[in-house]
Length: 431
Ligand code: MN
Image 1 (tube, rainbow, N blue to C red):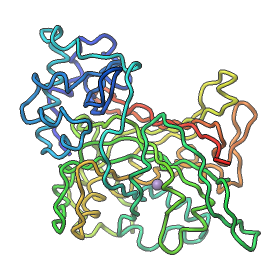
Image 2 (image 1 turned 90 degrees about the vertical axis):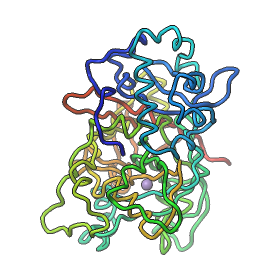
Image 3 (image 1 turned 45 degrees about the vertical axis):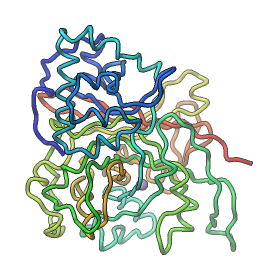
Image 4 (image 1 turned 90 degrees about the horizontal axis):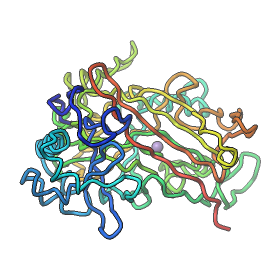
């Protein structure tokens, strides 16, 4: 990732776009990348500024020559394939256009009200891999099965992951159909097939891969951050009943691949520069990472000051006009492995990562109950229902529930930036 602060992070700089200054999610210091469309014009790259979207394709002529061909494409893969310096140059140019009033007449016609635009998947996702770096989540879930030995012996040595399914990744706002599948209750002899009764969410960060690596050529840890184009929010919907029955010996399959929701805006590596943090030290007695995963610069700057939260609004809550309720809230520093470490580990055997590939962090939970990133943890495996203001309770997600993940990066001396919502509502299973 680009790790340098520059003029685009200056908290004192103002934008001439109405409503951008002080915007809680998309001030001019954010400038996320996404793919949007408007009535009469198809998907194209844009950036969010306040409550508007700036059409980067329409302004390509005013932007650096090295990014122009990529800005005329309906997905961001070509932009991700460029070196990080090209995206930094794009950011600086867009920042100038939106802050210098001299450009207002040229640029204003390319602004659209965000509420009048449709968002699309930012990239054609060739491959999707989900990791398991939330050590508190791994511990809580492990404890449900192995109270005395929750973490398996490999956890602190190797970033655990599995290959997910790219085809069912959908943008925020698209409803999720409750999956049907095979499960076996503990008190039955044989499994059955039907709608999931233990549907859950997983609070995760998504990592968008930039230029990537040729097959057979690993990515050294010292270069890993240069291969990350940016981050998004990811809800890795999970059918816990299917998962418990199917996962041995090869890991998650149909419990996970029926639908995953991502936030539409790519919060770029450049935008996140002020929010980099030291990776929290490992607890005393934990092994140091093996050499190929250890880089002093990554340990010093490889974590992020991002606060994540999950909100629920049931159908009854919406009918009664009640605000969504926060289920959990916690920092992204609860990751045992850094983003750079999972990128390097993924490519360490020569596996090629491609522009627009997506990596999931795994569920990010903290040690405190208010920080649990899934209902499986919050309800203690379905044993302890959560009370809602309507008098309803939840152990798992019900039809009509709407789950929203949101996140804000905050740091001293920087303007806070948001990720925009990652939200979806549950539809009943097909009969
Ligand atoms: Mn997951």
